[in-house]
Length: 333
Image (cartoon, rainbow, N blue to C red; front, side):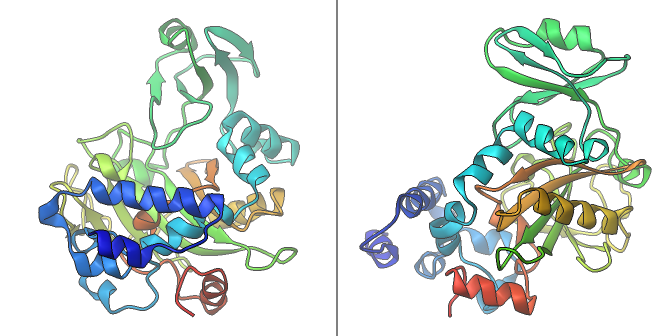
């Protein structure tokens, strides 16, 4: 293990690269010994990727390694972009100021250490609360009404209180007890040029993790054709190993082969959001597909889960994207 780490290490690193190296090693040390494949680690992949990725990833040159991604991920976007997108109130404020108020959830208020700052008139109905910063869907919760939410939230911490979005009927039919968010990755190879969508993954919750739809807690990831919105391979890891299916394990509803509603509109919304942050270079956007159309939940500018995006195929084979990936060190030149 030590010799492999020494092979991966570089003699001089920026601060962001050092953090990335630490993150890579920290993840690796959490993998049980029986799941480790040293030859993958030597190639820069986490040593359990053979349990999660399709078998062909080991010979497919377009897969981005975990080590390379860890080393450059936090330097892909300026710190100002990372800070603004990490702050959910700031993200919503900037989207609203840019004319996209109808394309983000309605915010009723911010709760800061038990004190409420109203942002919009509440006319009744369920609400959704989440920390103003944070990752992995931690501490999110749905409430029957605003009063219940305000009386139940902790006295310490900052929370955003939003309308509770309802997923599109097609998405809800597959699994009704979660929002089931679409992740769309957009890149901007050259500043001043238009951004492009390079990858999309649809998440579905299961009975193991609802109302969250996070993959690590028992959710499903579904490959999405970026040109058509057609759902492909459905992958879950209920016991730590890759399992491929065509339908939802709880509802038995067919998934593979369906076309996502409003997918093209969702991609257009993501590209519009990239224009709101013209210095953004690489962002994973979370979009809720609802009956009223796509609603942008948030942007992930400091760390877009690479494993999640490559669960069925490489992040992208688009010629322009691959050329940029090589130029910034994400893939071998």
